[in-house]
Amino acid sequence: MREPAPHTAAADRSEAAAPAFLLVDLVAPAIFAGASAAGTAADSDVVTDDHGLPYLPRQRIAARLRDAAVTAVRAEPALLPAAHALFGASRRHGPGRILRISHATPPEPVRAAVAWALEQRAPGTANTLVRAVTDAFTSVESGVAIDGSGAPADARLRTVRVVDPGLRLTAPLRWTRTPAPEEVRCLARAALAFTRAGLKAGRGRGRLDARLAQAPDTDSESAHARTLAWADVHAGTETEGTVRERRV
Image (cartoon, rainbow, N blue to C red; front, side):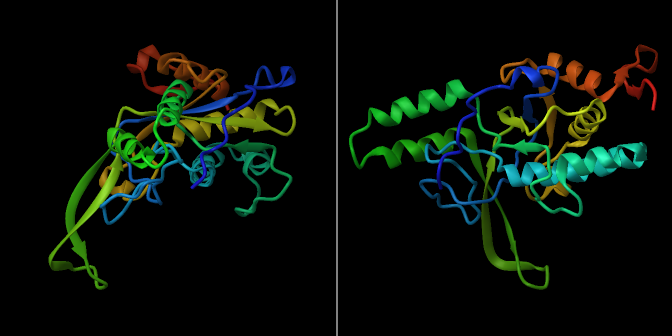
């Protein structure tokens, strides 16, 4: 699998007020099932780039953000045109969408360090390091396999490789035009409602914090505050930190 292309520019000047990155902080083990670069012994592998680093594919991000936008539209039906502009109508990926989402990858310094280490390897020996990189960011969990009827299979353990919590993944955002305020508000509310990714989310896997930012190295608190501002909501101190709308 080819390595996701790095982001070449944060944003145009005309987009200075718009979010340029989606920051994803994993707070629980996540199952990003796919094919890894070096392959592992797990029954279910984790998707990685050519360097062995796990990442969240852009298609899955877009699907989860679109689902989260449905929640935002239910709360404020006037945001429906903005949701269609951001994600397309009826799950179609037509050219009319104004938002383009890249893969969510580990921070650039991490990717650069791993790429440099691989370049120092002798030809034919890189796979060992690639596998070690994957092992550093993931773990293997075991469980009872399930047969076709949903019952546990006798004497059969199934192993699943999961991405460890604590990892930050960053997805660059690209706009085909300057977004309107309601479009940014819809995206920000979708990001706040985007709390899980990967498989087996109903079993506690893949919990995350998704926030918007204009720089990839924005700290979590600043990104959270900026996302609340874009979403036009704020944390009310009189409600012990709960988030409530300024106005609809």
